[in-house]
Length: 143
Image (cartoon, rainbow, N blue to C red; front, side, top):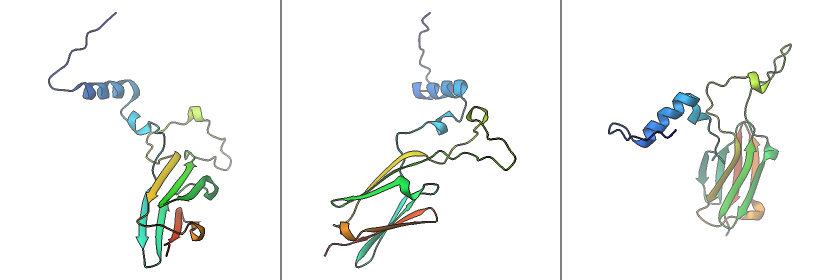
């Protein structure tokens, strides 16, 4: 059976498709759509000798982050696991099929971030440390 598509003046095709998706999959479906990669938030500071980069990476183990310098670019890549409740003492583990999600705003999965630095940095002396959910990177300027 073929149903012709009628265009209504009061709504665009995209708006009608959005309403249809919400009817079929629920109003919060778009919040759950996985993306290929997410981009962590970054602050960049500078003094006379160095650039300082801080990257927000809460919930990620340090060994899941790759940091490299490519020319004037600082490249970060890695993966954050999907956060989910752990078993409480005396409680059975919650199977994924029985766990209902009502809201998902924490990005997870692969991440990638490339920062073009204002000037060349010394790759050999670049240092990084991880504390309190932040990756701190010190990039000495080339002289």
